Image 1 (cartoon, rainbow, N blue to C red):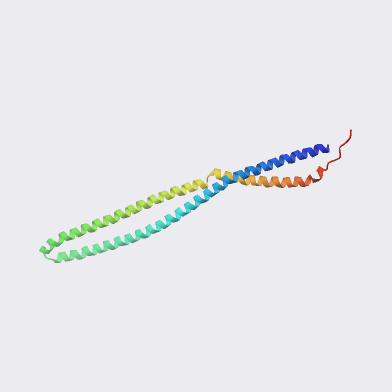
Image 2: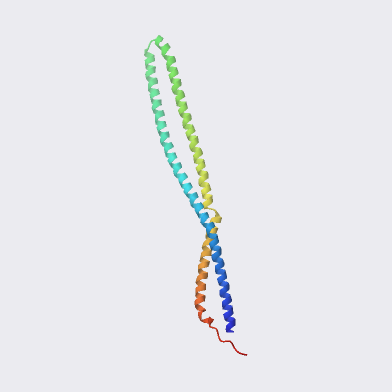
Length: 194
């Protein structure tokens, strides 16, 4: 009966050893995939962060440029308004012959100022379009990074890896305890005679 128990114990220990080595082997071969996935995730998060930083810097630069352009436009308009007021009073005090030569020149000057202001407005609109495109691209990049980070397969793989590691630790602990408990069972009795 003792030999049967010893044989069963050896069989159970051999089976546990095979299961533990199988779990260790599976964990070892899954490690490169998990490592690669985590490295790719880290790179994606870093790229998204750099993109956000670059967009923030570009937005601040655009904001400063827009403020400067708005100030320059306001100053130009103030100067134009002041020039118009002065010029109008000058024209009203000037005699008819002078008015006939100055008015066409003034009209040309006003048309040029108006064209310059329209060009400045068009440039501002183009800047706004470029910023809109950059913002839309950033939103796509952030959405793609969010998709990678929230991928359920990644979470599942990490959970499975954690569970496999815990199972390997538990099995190793159990094997150690079983080995300690069975150390006295392997004494070989002398063979019995008929």
